[in-house]
Every structure is written in structure tokens, then in C-alpha cells.
Image (cartoon, rainbow, N blue to C red; front, side):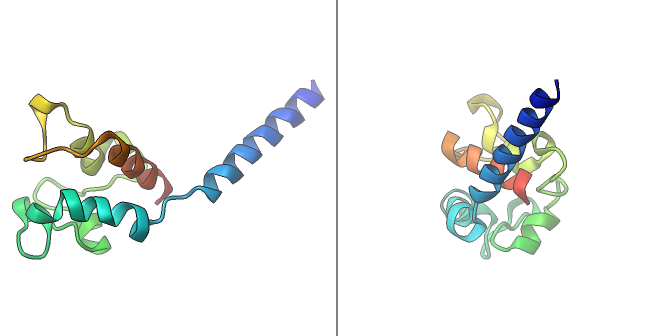
Length: 112
């Protein structure tokens, strides 16, 4: 029983170490997605819903609908919801984020 417990703890520790090593870099991985998909409507020149996504502070502050990021539960994050909406029920037009972008943003929300 003790061996099993030690093995489980070791596996959990290694998984955590691997996850930390694979952290998403905001500047390199996330910002380009936001630039490509979001800045036209939520950048410096235009802020639909008073939402500006081109700086970290404005990303956290959010817009008329509230805070953009919920670091405790990514499913309630407006950014996560916008990137995962069905075609018929989008929060963000004209196009929602692609699946890879969505996963990257989801991981970033958990790591932040």
C-alpha cells in the first residue's frame, strides 16, 4: 500500500513538473491569436462592448459584459466561452476562434 501511495505521488509530481515546463507564453503563443482574431473589433482603434484585448490590463478588466478572464474556473471565463461557442450561438462575430487557439487560451487561463 505504501509503495502504491509513493508511486502515485511520484506520478503526480512528474505530471505537474511536465505541465510547468510546457507553460504557454503569452507574448509568443496567445497574443498572436488575439491579434489575428480579436483586435479588429477589440483593439486600440475599436472596442465593441468597451472590450479592449490588446493589453494585459485591459484583458483582465474586461468590458460591458464583465471580466474577460476567470482564473478559478475557465469555463466561466468570457474569453473561453467566446472561443468555444457553437456556430449558431457565438459571443464573438464574425468568426470564433479555431480549436487549437481555444485549447491554447484554455491552458493559458489555467496557468495565469
